[in-house]
Length: 118
Image (cartoon, one colour):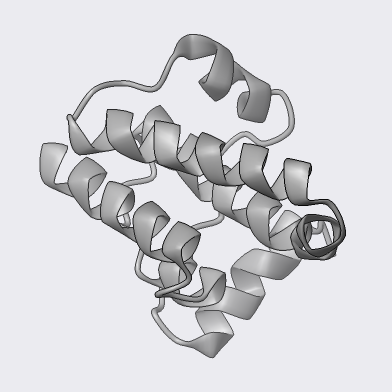
């Protein structure tokens, strides 16, 4: 479990620094769908991607979102659980992460459409 959290922390950092596209990070997520902290990080990245236009228009919002990704990546890198308020903020919208079970575009699109409830 700690290895998966460290992997997620690295993915979050790469996205934040612009070294990896969100889609690639989501495809690289571990298949561990039972870890609520990993699920919350997955949803944080989905929301990060959805807010791309807003980040481009609002520098303060961009900085806040970047700081948030850095914060949760720091916690995950230490192998700790995310604070319960972060986990619950995503749980009220999603029962589980739509982590693709196949690491290709088809798996990504299937999970994305499940996320959109299409």
